[in-house]
Image 1 (cartoon, each protein chain N blue to C red):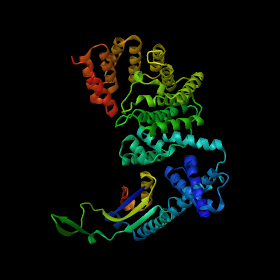
Image 2: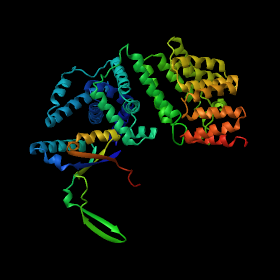
Image 3: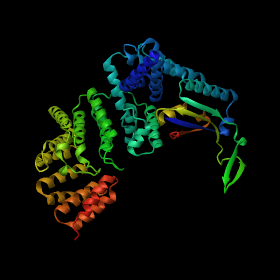
Image 4: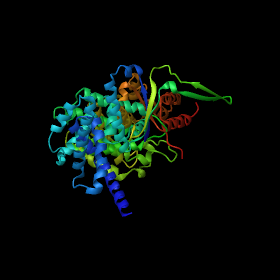
Length: 117
Length: 419
């Protein structure tokens, strides 16, 4: 099954880290990502730019509106995502916990619905 | 094309190996690595390494030992790499690397011990029953979290959390990965048998949902009991396996063509599976011969009595009541009292049975159990007390959660003569 790992960062926690600590976590993340990619378990992985670059598009009553944001109530923001292949939800959770980002924020694990026929 | 078909043949061979050996390899890796999650990752790595290496080297003589070695090596390698980032793992890694030089354990007894360790650990009394069931089905039976959730009609994240918490509990409480010693064994075995029987019961008589049974669960429970019996020749393991086989033998007869429930007295006994009955009866006799007769063997002996009778009227109700009398002394439970009351009503008529059920309900034990009210309704109906039957059927209907049982009760209610 495919699962989407939505990685949320907590700016307070990240800000409290020393630079070498952060660099080490990032290096760990990249190594883990390369490893999982080579094994065919990591299907795609992207880091996002900061949330102040976000734009939201809506169409209401036929009219399009474009706004800044969203700026969520919570401090955590969506920082990136991975699409992984795992046997079941517990394996997906195990892989999610293997990335350092669960420590600096949270990782939401969502099963991907079956693709279009 | 030749290379391609060789590759496909190897893939098929490895898939077969995964089905037959992955639980054994996992059980040994948990012992060697001391952690469920690390072992699961190592198992994954080992099978991946097999796909890569066996295409050039061929399948080794002892693939299981190869997989254990490869898994252990990969796990140590992974922990070592992680240690570079975390620091605190190095001592664990050194401990693991220093462990016995040949961990592959070619000794079959040792491998089978590992499987028993896994079963006993997953069913450890420090874990809640729900957690024991989820962990056993996933680690021992290799069901996915999603399959377990579907089978028990529980959201997948709920099952996933139970499994994660159970593993943490095992780790934090320092539960040793071992087969319990003689003194502890009976009590610990009870816990394993209860897990198997709960899985079976949920499959055989689903507490809720649209169908009477969920065969995946009955099949897994029987598979587990068979595995346990190959590992541990215990009378109650025989009794439990016999009980499940004897119940399963009636499978084709207890569901009508329209998915409706058919109760034991009305079942077409020609549809009963004679091979399962023969196997169940033989196991009951083996268990009885040990003279250490427990509650599962007694229940299996009752089921065997039913299986023996060619018609409902032909059933030896006195013997069944006698078995219930022993059973209720060994395991005093209101459900057993209820079943005994029904057997009494079959031998002595509806009134004595009804008196027993009314006494049980007056104690409040089974007030929320739909089958107690359904049995009461049936006996009232047989006594011509249709008003009482009506209110008892209604009470049962208010409590029932499974669609076919509900339909059955509705039919019985609407079949009552009006006044």
